[in-house]
Each structure stands twice: as structure tokens, then as C-alpha cells.
Amino acid sequence: MIKDVLVHLVGNAEDELRLAHAEAIASATAARVTGLFTNLLPDLVPITPMDGGAAAAGVLAELDAEARRTGEQVQQRLAGRFARLSVPNEVRRLDGTPGRLANLATSEARRSDLFVAQRPYDDSGAASWNDLFEAVLFGGGRSIYVVPPKRRPSDAFRRVLIAWRDSRETARAVAEAAPFIEKAARTSVLVVDPDEAASGSSSLDLDIARHLERYGTDVEVNLVGSDGRAVSEVILDQAHRMSADLVVMGGYGHSRARQWILGGTSRDMLERSDLPLLMAH
Image 1 (cartoon, rainbow, N blue to C red):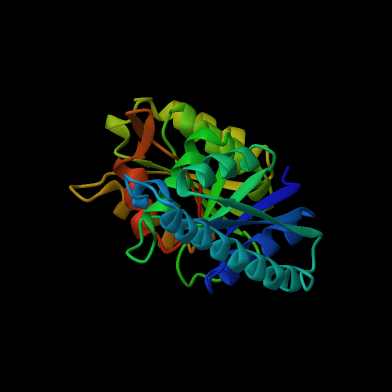
Image 2: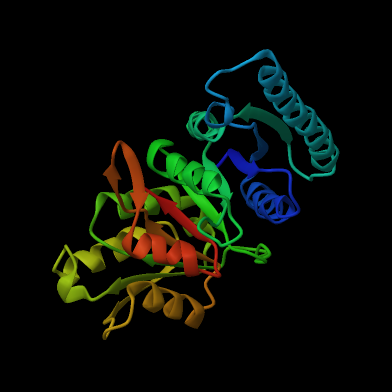
């Protein structure tokens, strides 16, 4: 059940696309939309002179004040836009440096049902937003709905593709996607390289299909070999073949110096997908 949709906003023109997806999801699920505007403040520590000084302190304080003033203007503009939404809504503003914003956004995500975000790792994306995305995915305890560039929302989620692995991450993603699967006329369970899958058993893949049928969707299972292609390429090829409105998959990564780093197929999909993704860890 989705009752609270949290959409990440940064104050640029691309906010409108993410907001359109959030509104479409909320309209379909009778949910509330909260716009989470993360206002980036200058990280003053790296640029603070070693000897300090009143003049330097004044300059740094003005940089911080200017960022907050700009944030206030953006928040007012967003409030005007949200007033025209067709669903219950509110706008929240968070001020902070990149690391603090990542922590605050993660905390906010835990009090929602779905976090709508832009696709990370684009050439135009700032590293700070990539870090925020990973912080929410690995620490938020909720799924992320990823909006690819220029992709308008579908009028309905009729076809869903599940990139299935017998893993905790995939199971969580499927559970988080249940409200979409219930509304789908067709759900495809895709197993890439089944002989190498962790389950090693097609009967288990059929079990997940029987489970999903209880949601009222028409389910099919496709066992496909990669034949030397990247797994992400196979997933996207199958998703396009069925004209999928949503791709569901687990988000996999590893810890390095207490930070989570996305890798493998998860990162490839985030870099390449032109279809909305629902990802959970």
C-alpha cells in the first residue's frame, strides 16, 4: 500500500518530470505527495583559510546566507506549483551540506512509502546527488522509484517486468512493488542465465510466479541466457519487448569505508535504463 510518496526536488527544471511521476503514482494509489527540497549549502570547511580571520569568516557567512535566501525563493516557487497538484501535498525544505542532506533525506524516506528520485550517475548529475541516492537506497529501508531523463509517466502501470534473483534484495523489491503489480494486467518474471542463478531451480522460479498470480495479475516466466551480453542489456531488451511501464529489481552493492557503493547490474541499469525502475535493497 502506498499512502505517502516522497519526491526529491533540487530546484531545477528537471523537478517537473519527477513531480509528474509522483503525482501519477499518488493519483493511482490515493496517496499524498511530499516534495523534499534539498537546498545545498556551501561546504565551508574545505575552503576555510588555515589562519581564519574576521574577513574570511564574513565571506563564508555571506555564502551561507545567500544559499539560504536562494533556497527560500525556490521553496516559495515550489509551493505555488504544488498548489496546482490534484492530490494532497506539502513541500519540505532541508538545508545542509552534501553529507548532512544525504543523512536527512534518508531519515525522511523512512517515514514514507516510496522515494521518487532522478536517475543517478548521469553526466549532468552532481556527485552529491549520487551520494544521496545511495544513502537513501541502502539506509532508507524503502524502495526508490527512479525516473529516467525525459521519460513522462505512463497513464497506468499495465505491464511490469521483474528482474528475478533468489535473493533478499529482489524479494524486498517485489514486496515494495506490490501496489503496482496488483494494478498490472501483465507481469513478466525474467530470470537471466537461470543455470547460474542462485536458486538453480526452475521450480522455484515458477513458485514466485504462482505467488504473484495471487495479486490478480497475469504472470509469465521467461528464462533467458545472456549469451555474452551484459545482464542489464538483456533486462532492457525484454522490458522493451513487452512495452513495460516499470522494471522491478533488487539494488546490490558493497560497503567500502562505511559507505555503500552500487555495482554490477544495479549500477548498469541505473546508468542505462530509459524506463522507470523500482529498486530496493
